[in-house]
Length: 321
Image (cartoon, rainbow, N blue to C red):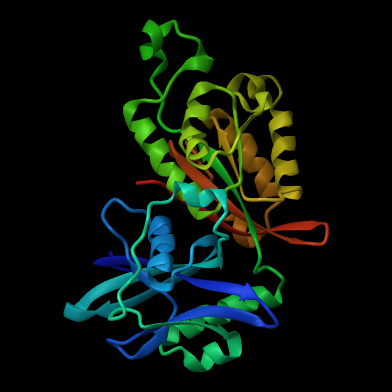
């Protein structure tokens, strides 16, 4: 498929009341009903675009869930537009993740003149675009499978750090090696990604480059950092099994949206442990070659829970721009 001229993001925002409901918007210019969406701004990730557009068009703060896929279509001038969709849920106004987001101005009535919660059966009749109805069908399938409600586990590689040879003349302690200027900027941008997924728990190796990667989000939200010694490079080299056990426990007992900041040498162990817990349909989305993840990049693992069973139902990679 050719490279798109325009990129955007949208979401099916849902809630469970007496029935399953979704949020739709009316666009007076086109006189149609659709799921909210919008174009990505310069320097903005699709994830940031999605939560911003939901706020602009619906007034709702949302938290992203599992990805739903893409819509591709041609717009004015023969340009190709590509829109990525996620599931999303309303975020309580008191949620700490909102403190990390910029303020957003609501869309004008000329752009969106009505926002409405509707049941899924009504949505089938109301939606004007076939692509939206297809997205709705995917969502209903996930709901019927018990995979609609998920909790994200973000496995992040720390942002770019100073080279060992440049740290205190090559004699600096490995655990104090800091981020570069570009690494610090990416760490600040990562905070927006963590906010989009509503991260409530921050786990990290205690080494400085990992701590500094998630510190901007911790500072913005007031959440505490949890440092785990077994996640350091040195501890992993000594006993990689403890890292594998950590991943297994994190997936099996994930109770709230979480991020874990890691070192590159630990990633083969992390991904091997994760692969053993992931259904084949999603395991193909796991990185399979070194360097596994780029600096400042995160693997987002979407986990559905039914009773005491945890199931991976979605995997995606994300890196702040």
